[in-house]
Image (cartoon, rainbow, N blue to C red; front, side):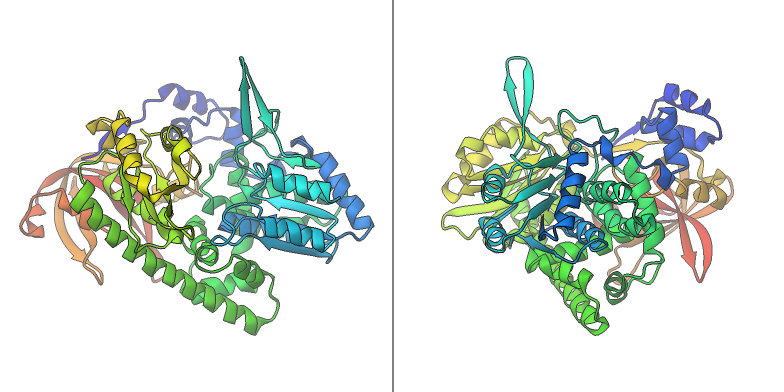
Length: 575
């Protein structure tokens, strides 16, 4: 059972209708997403690269650009420090490719996920000092690296910190102060003193703003600059940041260039992964991002950067093949991990409100993905842990639901944790194994969650009779792409729809195909991964559904077959 809500934002809708050249559909969908400022609406409907914000509105940007120019004039060594996930990888590539326009005296370094953990490692700092680096630029990391940045600065190395994670805060009486590392420049749209118009850039987005400022200051080739958006688009979609405002422009412009890319490494990754269609937000989020992430999860993220920097075609295909194999291995480990944890949940913790599961058969690199899968199945806050490299310490990740602030609630137990970090919807932690039961009991006892909180919520944009939807209407919805966080694909509902035909298709017979009929109009519907979906219905044979009238929630979709577009709907819920 799901909780269904139809948006009731008529005020937003009527406000948006007053804006010039807006359709009723656009007024409704944007109103439902609280996009009502005329300038923001204009940017959404007609996104242009010229609408990107002035990068010099970011704190310390002017000083950072002047410092880079000074280093370039003196042929100083520049080193990039980045994270080991796909946002870190694309951030590094944005900076490297951008700076290669000016110099080849540039290198990069990334911490090892297993040996060093997250962030700037001591080894990275020591190597930069030993190599007599002139400037370190961090990307997607650094905002909490106080000791590491101090060591770099004490050794005479300049540091430009670019990051998009939350700054450390200190509350004093009624004031909230930010605590920033002692870098020469700290560029982060989440700074408390920031006046930048949009705060939800990913790491690659912040890296791009630095390159944008450098290219503008030096009157350099803007077309070269905009080629960097191919990396930025991948990082933005893959990091699940808001796909509105400036991010929408970055992704749209990046997708334009990706579909005509001359970057052979990206082509090779897609080709060897069997993707031969148009590159869209799905390609970025579910094909390219997992491929890049697999290197940091199972090997080293340096392999992904090495591939993206490679110029020899034979080596490109050799390296991309290895990464595709790594990702396939990651999928296998994830599936195996999911099955192990799902069995434990069913046998031991099915009645728990907060799922805290340990297994020594998992790899730490897939704990977060498995936690997400379990959370999705049970719609319960989920923490998955496994063995770490330290004896008697277990380590893992958590994923939450809308009604439970995981960072806040787990944080109440942080004095008993070995390490902890995160945000309301996710966390990472390590804990002594003998405290696991205590943590589980503490979280469940203090959750304050009610049964109703575990029902998935479906927000519906409007009621539309399926007999009235057309292919043209589907095209108009697709103009609102790319869909993602803060701009979800529009969801609609209809009542009293008859099931004329139903079948299970596909290799594993887990794809549900239905022909719905209403007012003498038939429309094809599809539901992927339908096993859990069908479990909520009591039936002996799937044909028992035929001629039943149901209420449905759905997406409007286009199925392209043999070069021709056909209207279909993707089923979300049915009762």
